[in-house]
Image 1 (cartoon, rainbow, N blue to C red):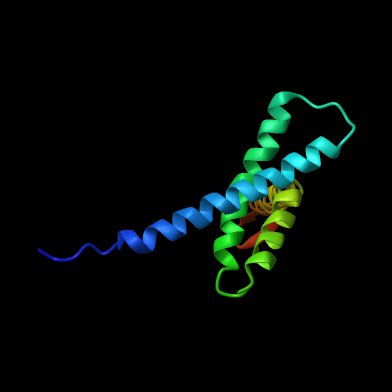
Image 2 (cartoon, helix red, strand yellow):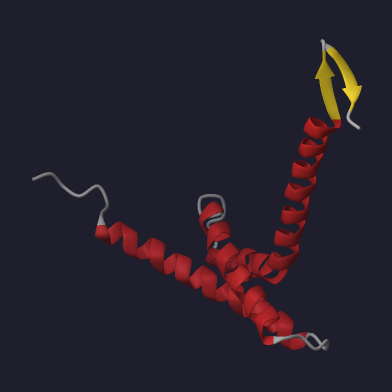
Length: 120
């Protein structure tokens, strides 16, 4: 039988790092919400904490080879966790604007006999 392509000893530190990054990012968002004075709903809070917990491990895995100091890694993950909703909102608005621009480009100009004309 051949050896498994996934080494269990290699997988455990990766899962552990991901869980720690998710926890740190979620806690930084929790701290942000606790320091805020504006009233919010439970689901708004839950959505923010979940978004930070998802983005944290992604950033943690991305900076893994670039930053060697554990303290600096946790600081980067905390900063991203703190600003995750704004980053996701910006990304969603940017993708939506690009999509609407492409749709308008396709719908706005129709070709007729090789000539471009505006749609009515």
